[in-house]
Image (cartoon, rainbow, N blue to C red):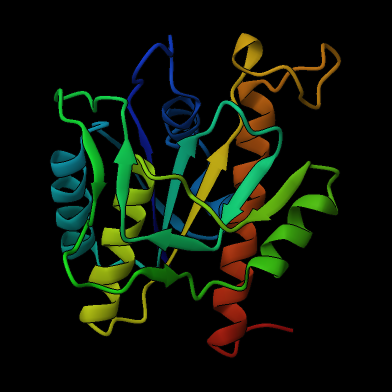
Length: 214
């Protein structure tokens, strides 16, 4: 079972992007313990280049699941994103210097796309381990949502069985003011633990769908 896990480079005023740091840590994990083969990737925080890179990776590896990670510093929990919207609407430049305000990602395409992953099951795998997590209905309107929409649309058009879900991470340290460790801050080890739980939850769902579950 192959799972592509991608994060993003830092952008705007962030000194680092937790999604990149988590992906880099996952690349060093014992994949056998996770029950799958991880293919890790850090995308440029650019509308066009990010989609080109992830689409190429999907085509080359034929994964069972694509798991996207991004940062939402204003959020206080790990957020499992249910929808991707067909809109780019952010005054913040991407790292290539482009601003997209009120522009459809795919002109005339579906207004929203929904993940087919069983999010309540993944949420339970997190909350059972006391990881603050929620299901979110809004992945924003910046590059994270842009990539999420494009990947879901690619998989839909190609009628593939590959699943896709996007997870927004809270900021770490001074990037956010609420967390789960002793200093009331999220740390990278907290986020790595959370995403490992997401991955093992996804593996269990896939095994169940394939008739290998208990």
